[in-house]
Image 1 (tube, rainbow, N blue to C red):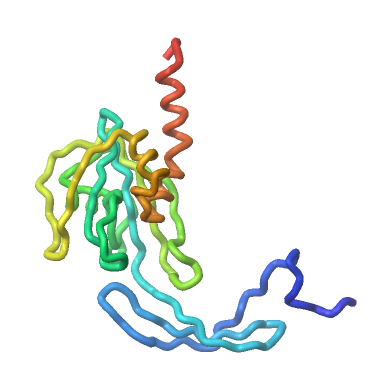
Image 2: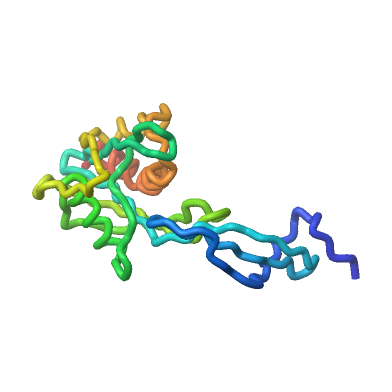
Length: 201
């Protein structure tokens, strides 16, 4: 039998064994947890740091005119503003659709009776443990007053969806989770556009 070697690009990686976990640092947003892990075949051990936080939700909201509800806000990680879709942290026990509708209403005052999940992604599996759910709201309309928290200050703008995709390709929309939502919705949008162009439509 050939010797086992980690230098085999065609072999599935091993699952490291977690020996222990301890809290390294805490904040209102996430905890930094140290995972002491061991490779099951090589026996190598190491400390790996994981950001543990609640799950997130983002919502791509389309008006009846097929405009996207965009928000622009200051982001402390980059020290600059960022054009995004509404979203935020899910409450404990909250369902993704309910969380998406709550964030949409609080941030923009828009609501919708046609909401579905586009999918879910892992924001950064290398260092984060949480999931981000991506929702789609159709026929969104402004029906409520906005309800920002004391740190929020948002510019709200309606943008034709094709222009939103153009903004993404120009690098004007660069938030990775927003780009995920746009990617997941693109096949449906292309089908809808094709039907609208069809003479029989």
